[in-house]
Image 1 (cartoon, rainbow, N blue to C red):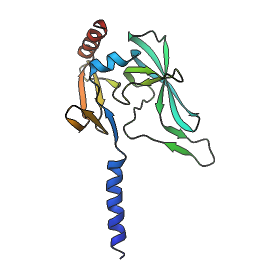
Image 2: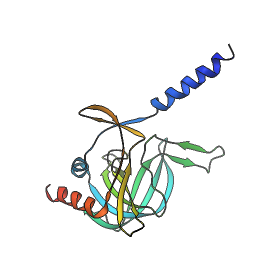
Image 3: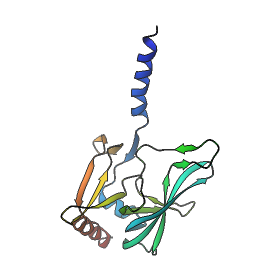
Length: 182
């Protein structure tokens, strides 16, 4: 009987990883452009965790360096699901598997939707609309997105997300073309 409990616990933990995976409708880059209210490139300059009703969110302030769609201004505040409230007697954290995240100083390429109820800007397609911009050793900027923690629903069924990488110049050219075609 003692051996049965650890085996049952191991099976439960294995299933929990699958049960906690996020599933989202797969969005092409064209679909991201079509649904986004704002498309911008910028750097994270600040973040803070706040309560919205009974849900923790992280508000990230991004200094805008370039706008491809919309008119967001010099800075924008992006609301991300989850966060940690460490100021409570017993700290509380809320996390969402596969949710977009941003860190101080990170340079990012964002597709954002305005929430109808609150007017807050949120990443389009859950984490599909957030790309990190990194500089290669040779000095070229590349755009990267890691969707490996989420499952995507597309015409073929449900597939695991993947990692993508493209030069910033090529990605901007592609996205600008879609914006011009709207």
